[in-house]
Amino acid sequence: MGFLQLLKSLDDLLYEVMSWLVFYPLTLWRTLRHPWAMMAYSDAELHDSVEQQYTDTLSPPLFLLLTLILSHVVELTVLGQSSLVADKTGLASLITDDTTLLLMRLLVFSIFPLLMAVRLIRKQKSALTRDTLRQPFYSQCYPAGMFALLLGLGSIATQLPWPQLRPVGFALIVAALLWYGSLQTRWFSRELGISLLRGFWVATVGMVECVIAIILIAPLLA
Image 1: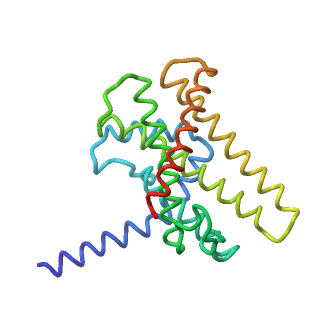
Image 2: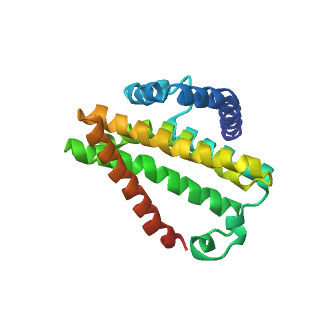
């Protein structure tokens, strides 16, 4: 019976992993085209039973993880090993191999949805619990994944040996920052029932908190 259960578990694992080849591109496309709808979709799905959640997409945290892996694979394919792995100065000294680099990027881009979710709960004056944090955190993982991908592709473009592509890379990075910032502004404005100007301020402070948290946490990984 134990062997049969192992085979069943392997069957389920294989199906789950192979299904990502279908549902990851769908989730990516939907997040790119309709980020607002995907954030609302994430909120709605958490009200379903566990078995019925995210049946036609990837769950937000999994989408964020796979997006970072995709960006990392593209970087390895196009540029080879990142210069951060070879560089031993500053924060780069914490990164010893590609696995460490990927884990560092996962930490960095997970901080954004976490602190944005915490900031929303604080502004709503709600109790901060695991239950209240889950919904905004999951909702934020979809745009965080797209944000990470756009930044990654822009960074890759700036490092290619063709100078004519560098402006394209910088433009993509700026576009990613503007897209993510405007999304956060509208999200806080809508969720808190405040003006866009006030939402912009709340989002800006949240972004600053994320950067500070990254700077403070990174040395702890040494």
